[in-house]
Amino acid sequence: MTIARTIQETRNTIKEWRRQGYTIGLVPTMGYLHDGHASLMKKAKESCQKVVVSIFVNPMQFGANEDLSTYPRDLEADSRLCESLGVDLIFHPEPEEMYESGFCSFVDMTGLTKELCGKSRPIHFRGVCTVVTKLFNIVTPDKAFFGQKDAQQLAVIKRMTADLNMDIEIVGCPIIREEDGLARSSRNVYLNKEERQAALILSKTIQLGQQMVQQGTRSANQLLTAMKASLESEPLARIDYVEAVSMDTIQPIDTIQGQVLVAMAVFIGKTRLIDNFIVEV
Image (cartoon, rainbow, N blue to C red; front, side, top):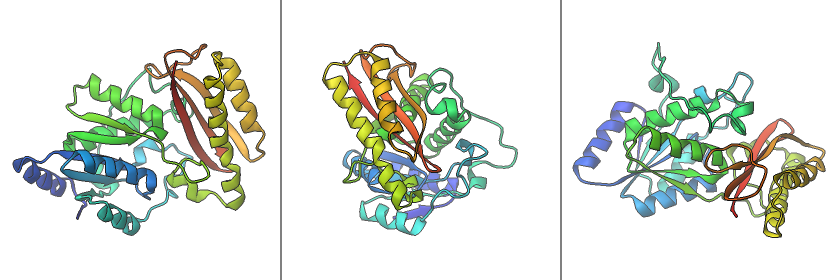
């Protein structure tokens, strides 16, 4: 396994792989890898002959008061995990490599980015779309793998690749959870013991929402009211949002019908966690 820190080194490797006719899968990450990332790598390894994992904490997608400087990093552990799963190349650039002095070109989107995380993190998806486009241009993968935990991000990237005619298959992979139900996240490391226990209210509330839909609830207002009440029962939880939106448009809906994303962002202490479920009625 190779660790490349420059765009040119990565391109040289990709060019040689292309010459030999290999298919290439890309798993974009910000590092501090966990079982959720591992599931994406395994899926990539199953369907592509060469796998690239990018590890880059992208400053462009962090707001002024967010956790860019404290975001967890451990390249040594990340490298061990990647190597154990058969990853062929880690692309690990510095911010200056990705954004040279005078950088002023961005990839932006309207519509899908206005609700959910886009409402409380207004610059976030411009940063995501820009860096993912750059990664696609550098690695030129046949397939790219993203987790459903970031369901809005997955929808945005699928739409971006379609709108911009990118010849890349976007593969969505299921949420990976801890044994007690908490969705795997690099930010879980921020939680102290009390907060870690309190964070279970997210997955419990997801289960409540799923049960209500399975039992016939079709009113989005009724569903969201019950889910918010569940979250508010935990003293350490502070709701950012709980919404039901169309999976196609990421716009709020009144009735649970068609393909629906029910998503939440909740602060446990100072740590912002997200979770969701998708249902088709």
